[in-house]
Amino acid sequence: MQSTAIILTLFTASFVLVSLSSCSSQMRASERYLTHRFDYGNTAYIAPNGKATAPPRAPRRVKRMIAAANALTEKPYIYGGGHRSFYDRGYDCSGATSFVLNAGGKLDRPLVSQNFFDYGKKGYGKWVTIYVRKGHVFLVIAGLRFDTGGSWRSTGPRWKPQRRGVNGYYVRHPRGL
Image 1 (cartoon, rainbow, N blue to C red):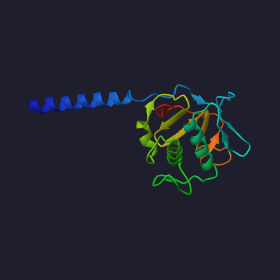
Image 2 (image 1 turned 120 degrees about the vertical axis):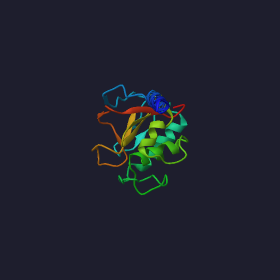
Image 3 (image 1 turned 180 degrees about the vertical axis):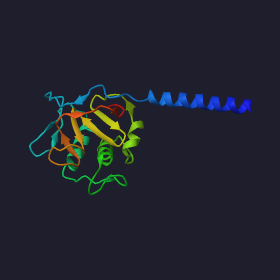
């Protein structure tokens, strides 16, 4: 009986340690709100047609990601869109994020939003940052938010310059970006 209690105690202690170590692999977004601040030459901007233009100094992979995101701006929001294949008739948040990362050579297969908690490295990236919370994920590429949520010119994958609350989000980034 006593050995069972010891084993149960050890199991519980190891579970707590594993849980705590997995928490340290995450970094909460440090800001309360995400806002777009244009910095000529360093940040992307949105043209009147809703497409983004990459900054001249952006790495080639970042320019490919921006071009891929631009290709989705006419697509509708479809729950589960982009999960089976990178190419779909519409996209949800994780399908759009997966499509864009794949175009930059940073993802091999589509992920659901929950899987982005383990993607890349924790923290903010120099060029690309992924914001993830339970049930939603979006990207900031070259300082500009690409998101399926919000109301600017409808829902679906779009560039969104408006302020967005990021309380409860964690930040990750692709290695090297």
